[in-house]
Image (cartoon, rainbow, N blue to C red; front, top):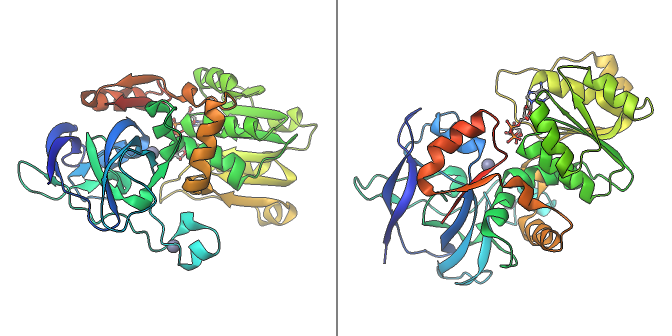
Length: 362
Ligand code: APR
Ligand code: ZN
Ligand code: ZN
């Protein structure tokens, strides 16, 4: 039986979001209906609302979520009703070249649910943000988008691994492969950069240098594990990182802003054999200009990190376990919990840099 529930809709370009009644159908083969327990407010939701990602309005927003599986369709064996799960963006195929080479985050053929959720008032089909749509009491996803984790974790903490926090931790531990004793610099300490700092600490980095232009962000970075702070409005971050690393540069530099000047800083702040991890997402018109001799003259690696190069079924349960054991403070990323009707105001606070994460709880 299809169900009618509440959902936060972005009706058209730059229009305020509003709560509407949506229709969630029964799960088809390979699908699951999930009763949402918590969903974080992310920049990507704001970009959907602004029409910056697609013009396929109306969108059902929300994608950093945890919930309880309510029902599953034919052929679903990995999850069952009652399971506590974290949702991820993509149910990967397991068979394409990317999947077979062990890089499913680049999967060419994702099997997300065919979207069949609609607006109750008009019957219009909804486009769920990142194939999830979790600012809603319930949502329909592919079962492959659900990863079971220990239900002892607070739902608002668990949901964050579905996007930005996983992207940051993964940039450090998966893409950057930070090791014990490494020096790490993180440029840009929003939610993603702070998660990279937490990841670097988890991996045993000896020095973690946080770089930002906002002193408030540097304070939070310190709480998450930064050992050195650089305000890049006051001093040149490349010089500062070199000075703090014996003149060499950091073993791993993580860029979590997404701008040409910070990409350039990341390039020069690394040790000659170091790794630069790019997790900040630039816009289409941005360009990076570097002297070729500098590119040639430096070894190491320049890598971009896509969704923290994560394997949800490996990384989500592991990080939740570490959190429950007190070895990774995922709770520090939750600034506030809010109700479903608070999303529009939460966008404002996020835009002004006042919060790490606002999380809608149900
Ligand atoms: N130098 C250093 N830090 C900067 C600079 C700069 N020139 N410009 C902005 N920042 C800082 C901001 O002060 C803020 O703390 O970068 C941080 C960006 O954080 P958020 O806006 O909260 O963004 P976040 O969610 O962390 O995402 C960062 O990663 O995954 C991507 O799309 C995401 O590109 C975005 C980036
Ligand atoms: Zn694939
Ligand atoms: Zn997100």
